Image 1 (cartoon, rainbow, N blue to C red):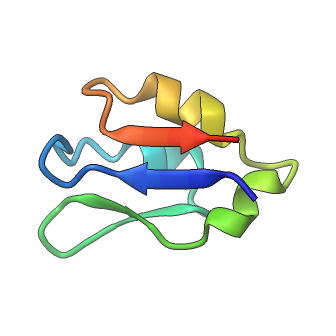
Image 2: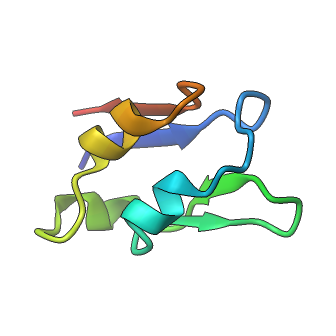
Length: 64
């Protein structure tokens, strides 16, 4: 399973990750993204590598 992490210090709460892959990411009450289920990265509906690359502030770390 890939390693996936959101750096809370870098996250600006834009919500792009959650909109691209709601199975894996969610927004917290303080408007920061968090990983809710990294095991879903391997599903056909979510490409976590693309989501990490799309983060405007590079707050998401993805490693296979």
